[in-house]
Each structure stands twice: as C-alpha cells, then as structure tokens.
Amino acid sequence: MVIVTSKSEQAARLDEIAGIWNSRAHGLIREMDLKIEKVAESKVELRMPFNPDFCVDDEGTLLHGGILTALLDSSFGLANFLATENVQSMSTIDLRVEYLRPAQSRADVIVSAECYHISRHVAFNSGRAWFDAPGKPEVARGSAAFSLIRGDGSMLDKMKTGGPGG
Amino acid sequence: MTLEDLQAQCERVPFFRFLDFTILEVEDKSILASLVQSDRHIGNPIIGAFHGGIMASFMEAMASVTVSHNWDVLRPKPINLTIDYMRPALAGTLFTRTKVSRMGRRMASIEAVAWQDNKDKPVAKGLFHFLLV
Image (cartoon, rainbow over all chains, first blue to last red; front, top):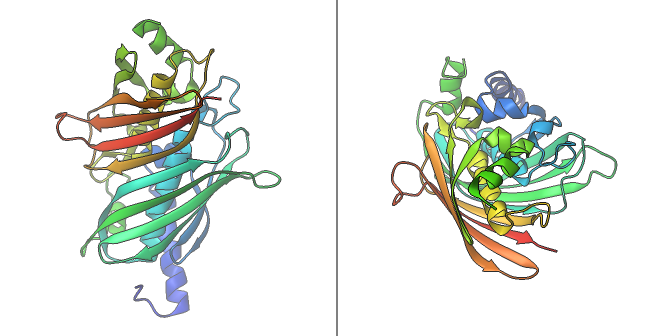
C-alpha cells in the first residue's frame, strides 16, 4: 500500500503528515484543539483537552455525545491519510458510534483510531475514546467507511501550500 | 412547551450554544431546525464543508429534544447512532427534520434527515437510539 520502503523515510512521512495536521488545523479541528499523541502507519492517537463548551450541563461535567462522534470522525480521516498516499479527497460514507457510558469527567479525552483495511476506493475504520483518568474509562466506540478519491494533488499538499488553513 | 420555551431551554445547554441552531417547528413527534455555518463548524477547509461530526451533533441534539421536550422531567440517554453521509454539506444553512420511529417506555428511536437548498437531495440521514430509564 505505502510505497515508501525505508524505515526512516516512512517515519519522516508520518512526521510530516502530523506536522501539517497540527499546524494547519481549521474549523472544528481547531476548536477541539486536538493534539497528536502517537502516529503509526494507519493508526493514530489524539488528545482532546477538556472544554466546557462541549458539555450539556452548566457545571461542565458531562460531554455531549456529538463531540465524541466528531472526535472519532476526525481521527478516522487522519488515520486514512497515514495509511495511504495520493488521496485527493475523502468523504465519510457512513458512521456508527456506540456511547458506552455517560461521558462524565473533566479529564481530557484520548481517541485511538485505526484504518484496518484500505482499497483503492474505500477505507474502513474503527476507534475508541476514553478519558485520560484512572482506569481509562472507555466512553465511546465507533466505526466508519470512507470514500477515497485518488489523484496527484493530495489534500495534504493543498493544505500545505496555503489553502484556507494558511 | 412553546417553540420559544424550547429554544430558550436549548440555549441553556453549552454545547447547543456552540452548535447555534434555531428550532423552526415543533410537533408532538417531529422537529424542524436550522443551523447556519460558522468557521467552527467546518471539517474540510478546501471546499468549506460542514464537519461530519457537526452534522451528527446537530441531528443528535434535535433527536434528543424530539424524545423529550422538557429535560427537567426526562433527559434521554444516547445509546448509539448511525449516519449515512450522502452529499457534502457546503457553506450556508443546514436543515434537519426529526421523526419518531418508535417511542417505547424504555427506549426511543428517532430518524433525522438533513438537507440544504433542496429537501429532495438530503446531505445526511441518521438513526438515533435513546434510553429513557
């Protein structure tokens, strides 16, 4: 799948993708203030700092499920970029999220996402989200399929060369 | 509860203020609402499309309000959701219409459809399950 053969080249590529993603965050990704914790080929771990704006209660203790869905969706997209090259654009075909317990905590959320299979046109993802707290309580699990449009001008290159994010 | 009361109740919820939607119609088993795109709603900066997670959040929010108009009496607990994304949702206004699929004593299933300029060309459809106990 990934054409890069040398281990160091591969590491450099993952670092570059992570760098672009971190520095060119836009829209909701920027609001969520996501930080890349770990990257590997087709896998990623992200941190979303606690934010009371994403809560349903005034006290700011219970996250709305929708923000966990957004977090999973975002991390799937990044995992797909890590898994393959020459993706011009991608879009979510469908998404399923299970809310395992009330998201009641002021801890950061960690999401781990994987692209577990990728073909020329479709990528398949699964992921889980938990609080960065003792016992790592898992709050949501998700899966998705993405449609990939391949071509020469990759989406990341467009972002790098001063798209709306720059 | 009147439409104004329901909107006021929603505006007390921090995440609903972040979404910033307007409820347009309330019926017993259905809600119509709109959401105007802001920068913070964008997922794909190249085409300026709504983030899939914002569309999901908006539909889930309206689904939960459809289940219970008064959260002091009953706050539905989300169990899971599935969403089909059918077209990109671009800059402008996103509409959603919810419909009760099944309302039981312990569980509720709510369907939601979202569209932009043309109601016959939905951008997304979702199914949301809630626990009522």
